[in-house]
Every structure is written in structure tokens, then in C-alpha cells.
Amino acid sequence: MITLGLTTWTEHPSLLGGTDNLTLTEYSGALPVVEVDTPFYGIPKVSTVAKWQKEVPAKFQFILKANQTMTLHDTYEDGLSMDALKTAYREYRAMLKPLIQHGQLKAVLFQFPPFFERSTRNFHYLQRMVQWLPGVPIAVEFRNQSWYEAGVKDSVFDFLKDLGLIHVIVDEPHAMNDGVSLEPVVTSPKLAIMRLHGRNQQGWSAKGKDWRGQRTLYRYNDTELAAFKTMVEDLKPQTDEVCVIFNNNSGGDAADNALALKEQLGISFGDLGPQQLDLF
Image (cartoon, rainbow, N blue to C red):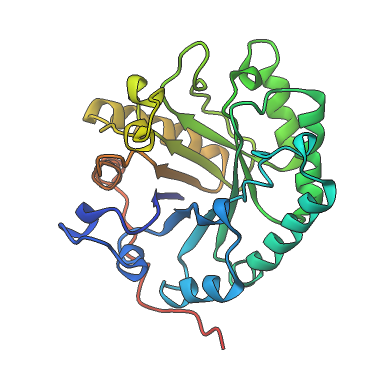
């Protein structure tokens, strides 16, 4: 199975022919999965999750970003206590329950900070993540090239396989000290995730107030999309599902690129349907 999605659901006017500020219901009529970043900043209430569920078809799924406490953006070495870390995991597990119960959680995405380098301590943390989120599909996106160094990356992939973690295949600008290389490696028999950030090298390293608006300002051309098509088709026999998430949306390009890749792949999502969950 191949699925396609975007980050957030409101900022993609071209998805439905120019409609601004899409609702989740409108978005879910076009694509079968969305990545939601709000849990990174604050863990949503269960009532918020239930509201999302009411607005989408029963087969629709969510990728939720792990909270910034859980991704160690504020490391417990620098003042975050182990109790605070465990509390974050406990609250996050509670928030996930309705999605897990109805099969609507595709994965929890741990997008680690660039300073999360390959180390014994961080290998141990990956093990703890699995212990603290038992039974939850966890996807790991590394942003430090040390995980992909020649001679060690195969061992890293084997470690992820042993833990049942999903390796996120990342496309982004890659320079010596910024960004990671594209590594199309599957570590889960159930799911592979590709996250496509664009290839704007200058914008990727942008500083200042508008850095977010520059970082993913990129439109993949047809040749680049064709290469992704080949990659998806190569990955497909290795896992039950390949999910491609476009995050190159600083200029509103993600939806157009997703629809173009959908056409190249010759797939459809006609079974999304209007059927919603009976939550109560």
C-alpha cells in the first residue's frame, strides 16, 4: 500500500482547487493521512483528538509529532527531571488512546534535534521510548549525520529493526554540518515513512525572524518526483505500507507535489468515503 499526506491540513489551498484555510474534513476527502505538529508544542486534550476523529472518515489516519520534552529539545541533563519526562510520556499515552482504539494512529513521529547525535546514551534513550510507549508505532527522524556515518549506519538500522522502530527516510538539503543524507532504508515490516522537506540549501540554513518561511521553500520538479516514484516502488515490497509526507510548504508547494506524485504512481484514494466513527 502507498499513502500520501501533508503536514497540517489548513495551509494547502491548491489541494481542492484554491480553497483557503481547508478544514480537516475537506482535507480528509482528498488524502488519507495528515501529519500534525501541534503535539510537539503542547499535548492536546483527549477532547481535541475526539473532535479530529469526528471530522474525518473512519479509515483516515494521523501521524502525530512527539512532544518537545519527549524529543529532548530540552534535555534532562540541562534541568529536565526524569519525573517530568515520564509525566510527558504518561500524558501523551492518554492522548493517543482514542486514536489507537479506532486504528487511526499511523505513527508517533520523534523528530530529534540536530544535537541528538549517535551516542551510547541516546541509544539507551531509544530503548526507553519503546518501553514508555508500549505497542505504539514509533517513527524516528534523525537530524544529525553521525547516525549515518559509513561503517556504522548498518548497525544503527539493525538496532532500529530490533526495537521495532520506523526509520524515517528524509529528503532535505545536505551539507557537511547541516542536514542528513537520503537513506532509503526500511526498518519495519509494517510501515516506511518518507518525509520530503525540499532542497533549498540556502533557505535550510536561514537565520532571522523569517527562517521558518525560508526553510522548506521548494518545489520538486517532475524529474525529482519521478526519482521518488522509483524509490517508493523499490521500498514497497519490503513493508506493508509506504507513506510519503510532503513538508515543502513554505510556498504552498506540498499539495501540488503530492498530487503530482499521486498521478505518477497511478494510485487513488477512492475508498476514503464519508463514513465517520461512531465515538459515542
